[in-house]
Image (tube, rainbow over all chains, first blue to last red; front, side, top):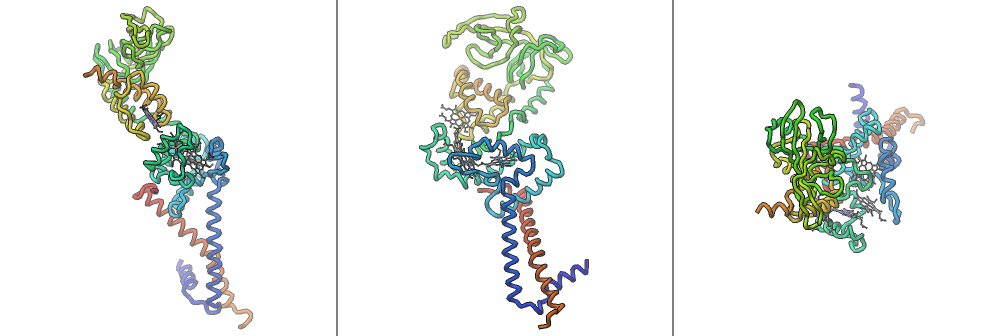
Length: 393
Length: 51
């Protein structure tokens, strides 16, 4: 160790006795130029697409990119992996490269070594990228795309208003253009964590007989207390009256409305309003022994006849809560955060219960809500729509 | 100048080693260290780089 130190000291500190200063400087200069050249070309190689997709885990991303406009388009400009994924200024680029070296390490050591493991981690990785783009305002996109150079008139009609607004706010592209280069990871499978809280609350509810409760998560309805024959599905936030509890099962009564046309499989919470409470199987819905019809009324708006119905079913215990408010507060949060990205979220009571499903269905594709949250938010919007606001006054 | 000066040889060797082995290694090492340092700072304090 000491020897090495001495060698180093003499290497650096003892002046050269025989070689001229000019030669030293010249050789040093040449060495500097060559090393820097070598360094940048290594950086170039590690930025190349071939290098990126060298690990087989990146193949999926490559294949997906090939189906998009960034792979081939009428202008012949190709976006390579590094154009979008590697920061362009030196400091951030170096930081990213070092992070990437750790990622390659995790590939080699097996943390994310197979396509399956990659898929499992995909959502997390995508979220990292989304966070990065959010923080830098999608800087990488904007080295090719610039709001200032966009001719909104030449855009498709569907793009114009959204893109004008985005340019005015100087908004980050990825707020709206998620999944632009690869398949958007399925957020559908990852459950909204807010539901866990609701289910926890539901599991500790001891239901009183004869009281009304609300379903916190879509559930199966059964015909028998052994929970063996399915009758259909109880929708999220549906109201049920608990009749009795036996072991692990709860007997509930559902009162709802259905349209007399068709099989009457879908039950709605209110007369004339398309707010679904339950969906029954065909033979169950048609079973006159089970399903009681107590009233028939014609909806003046559509001319359809609606029937007030009720039926008794079994569900698993611990799936309902006493009050609807916690459900609505989950829905409200989700609505506010997801639907205010592009425009101020419309007032719930701005539309009526039968208009919301169409509007919501057209918009929800822009958001990353999972399907249970979608169902809950839609029901929240419908249940707080103009129909009910007026009734409340 | 004598033709074979051991001193001279040794100095040339040193010069070449310094400029073509040590310099590139140091260059890469320093840049890597810098990268890691910035990354570490981003993780801890700075957050992801802004616009």
